[in-house]
Image (cartoon, rainbow, N blue to C red):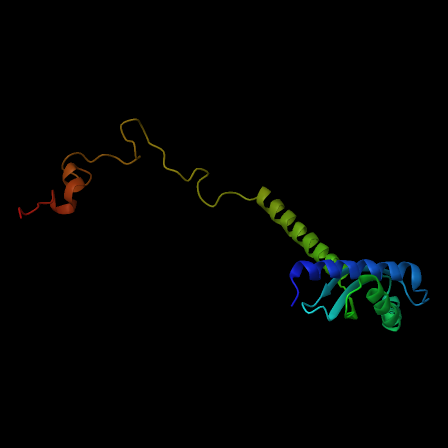
Amino acid sequence: MVDAARARKLADRIQQIVAEMLERRIKDPRLGFVTVTDTRITNDLRDATVYYTVYGSDGERAETAAALESAKGVIRSEVGKKTGIRHTPSITFVMDSLMENAAHIDDLLAKARARDAEVARAAQSASHAGDANPYREPADEGEPDGEPDDGPGGESGDGAAFGGEDGPSRRSPS
């Protein structure tokens, strides 16, 4: 096994080599507007996966995939020459669906913005379900909690405050 840093460096180098090859050396007319987006290599450095995108229709994508398959041997031999490693990894080309995923995410975000705007419009014309101020306010300065004071013998008197309904609680001397 190889450390992850070396594998990542090799993957980056393979990505550069493949991009240069597609730009300068591969002259296949089926090859469309290709962008190499990422390259990943296994830990044993035996297999490399090159991700790419193609700008164009589905037919152009299929033709580009066929062109890449036919140029795979030339690209692999060039990767072997320029990297100088003992065993040149086999190369697999995979269509990266990055553009479709980005378009799908943009559509979802647009729908979310439209729903947020609907909620904001509904909130502007909405009114409170209860009172405008849900908090109790004191009637005057003598009643801090807003409830009338029943006095010493009533429910809110001193006896209920110390021990409940039976009056003050008594502790047995132990």
